[in-house]
Length: 147
Image (cartoon, rainbow, N blue to C red; front, side):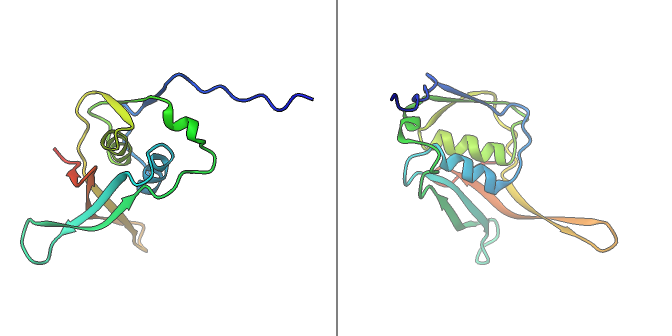
């Protein structure tokens, strides 16, 4: 009997992040991990240093540590192009930056929004909420996301 048919891979992958205002930071990191090589730097979270005003220090780095079980090694060979524009922001920028700086994808389009921060939302009992900027984001080898 014949075995299961092998799925054909696309000749390339196009990821359209134009007008994507972001999403969850953890999802952007997890998605980037599906495509980048072992050991590729994905993102650094930075916050203001207590020692000097205006100086940033890295407090946590997300590195690519493993491949998702569903993505075989053959997917690592598929060329990727990521489309971005001035409305590509937040977690979408994190994914695009990780793909670019790991050498895994070509970015095409316009300069992105450049939000460059990670925020926390704290709900209040009266129905209001507070939003705090907790980190600055740096893609690649410590490159700041903000312009």
